[in-house]
Image (cartoon, rainbow, N blue to C red; front, side, top):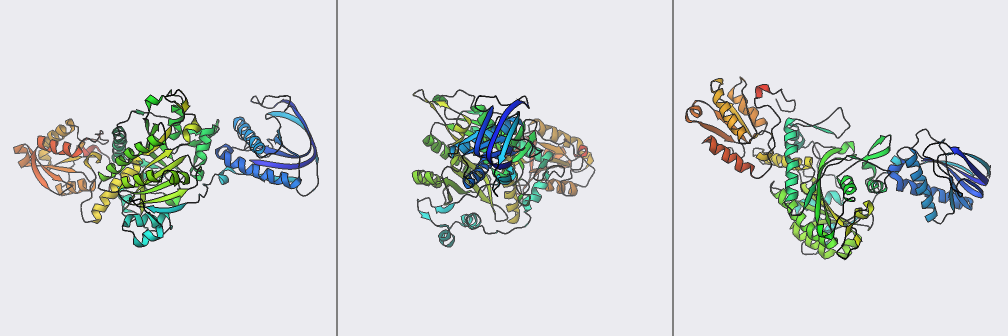
Length: 616
């Protein structure tokens, strides 16, 4: 936004004819005006200004009020003026910002007038000649969108309810993982660095940066595609296991900042916003499923009888992370978020359901053999009024938690919990989360009818129970890397393995029997392939190990004659001879109730191109 401020002895204007079809409607009050001792503010609204509307309007208003007070003017005249910039916003955005600025100044007790937008106007101006009578300003949206620095104070909360200062806990506390989190979060200590081995391990499954896109955007090879699809399906199953009514939806990934709820919600993310300019204005790429779900749910007719209920979507999400912070599968600019929003009647119901969500979050990480530590971000009023509820949540974690206390009213939530593992580099890595949201229902106009027939705004729980799709996979592979560091064979769960079983004939002589084994496994719903290449047995087995395939099945003369298979099980390093039916039973038991996704590569390795991401 650009402004030219002139302290005028006299100023008058008169609207003549429309300059654009979307010109503002003329009234007896705005069609002309005559003013004396006025601060006239000529304003050009530029593209992108609406994406930081509130901060930008506040900054412009601060500047106008400062000059207005200094020159002792009687009134302010806001005058739309398209000639201060070539980078013009569209008419809707321009009128929106001008109107918001007018309201802001009036709220500050300024007598303010606004000339009509979209009209050719004649004006006469008699300018005072003092040093402050002519001033020009430029306000850039990208400069004011930077995330605000929010003052926090930290405590450590024990399950007993005792509050401990972080410094004391570092000295006397027993939870070593929590100490790592405190060191980084509270004292900003630089933790050991280095290239994480988990990144190389992610690469071997086809998780790679896409060099022809923006930084922080990945591509997913066939193996990675299976893993992403499997985790996406599993995230839905996990959400359903909460036992509350759920609806799965889908939507767009960009939203226009000219809409107030979108703009207000977006501004909280500051310089992490990803923006796109179109012929309809500035759009933000969504950073979770919030925008779409809330825009949808506001149109539903909701009764207290319907609550609680959840809305779920695996949403393409975008966050403009800093280049130096980007890490494969963990810190990305584009990722997939299995977002669940649970709509509840009030804060008490939200707290009770949060305990259910919390249990499920811990249950899922336990399945990977890991444990979470928690960072609770709470508002000052929640901390004071709901301290006992906070203690109960920490008791649900079963270990002390770090608590950050923030000023009330800064965000839309009163409670935001980050669940963190300490990865193989010894650094905190946030995976899962939940929040209690008290602001967005009102912001988006989501209402429900209470038992007494009145309208009320629901309290919303936001949660990604298993974390983003990519971060869940990061946790899985980080767990495998930690096995390797302990001298064990790195493995991933069979349900998540892109290829669950590989059949390897000892020689081409046993290829037909190998095909029979392959067809049987595939018919049973197992992701299997056959290494039919004319290579040595040792090389084939070695390459199966490179792909971390859980079941390596070798067939030769003995297996052919007895109709059995020789199975090497990666998890425990054992080797067994068994019937095909027995093998299927073992693999099916290993997969359990997890979703089975079709494989993404040919059944025969001779038909598969050389995948660039597999180590040679």
